[in-house]
Image (cartoon, rainbow, N blue to C red; front, side, top):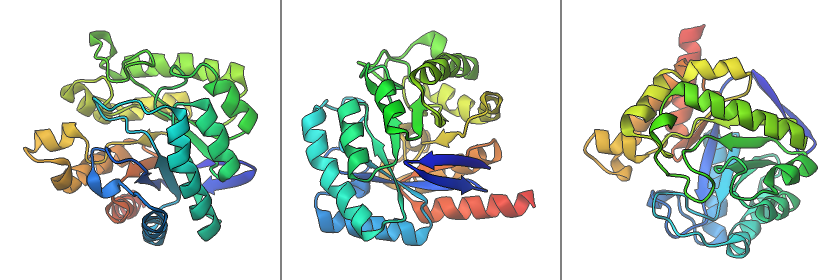
Length: 275
C-alpha cells in the first residue's frame, strides 16, 4: 500500500496500520492516554505493540483547544527519556514524535524516533521543514485553520475537502522544495473546523487520494464525536470506531488512536469485506 523510509529503515505496509497515542503530558484531553513516568510509558507501549500497533506517536505538548504552549525545552525533557526507554525495550517499533518544534524533532530523532508528526504543517516553526529534510524522516503534515499560532482558528472558507486539498497542494510544494522525501497527510479532524465540516471531510476523504500520499486519520475520542453522542471523551470509543471504519472505507492508511485493539479489529473486518 505504501513505503516509508523511517530513518534508514525501509518499511512497507500492505494494509492500513495503527498508530498508538502516548502522551507525556498532564493535560491531554483523554486522561487514559497520559503517562507520567518511565515504567508506565514502557507498559503502555508494550500493550499497544502486542495489540498490533505499528507506530507509537509520542508527544509532550497538548494541542487540545485552550492548551498552554509549554515551549521546546520542557517538551524535550518530557519526551526524550520516554523515547529512549521505549526504543531500548522495543527496538523494532517505529516511533513518531508529535511536535511542532524543529529542535524537539531533531533531538527526538537522535533519541530514536523516525517519523515527525507536525500538527502545524510547518507554520509554527519556520525551521521545521528544512530540519525534517536533513533528518531524512517521513513527515506528517496536518491541515488546520490557523496560521501556526492558533491551530484551532475557525475560518469559514476552510471547511470543505477542496480547501483541504488546496492547503496540501501548497504544503506539498513547500515540503518538496525543502527536500522532504516521504510525506503523510492528515486532514486535521477537529482543528479549526465545525462539527459538520469534520464529518463532511470524513465522508469526502477519498478525494484526498488524488494527492498520491498516505492519509493519516486522527479522530480518536474527539469532541465532534462525543458531543454528537451526548457523552465525553471517556465514552467515545464506539463512536470513534464507527468514524474510523468509514475513514478506512474511504481510503485512510493510518489510524491514530488511543485504543489499538478496536482499531485493529476495524482494519481486519474491512480487509475481509474488501476481499
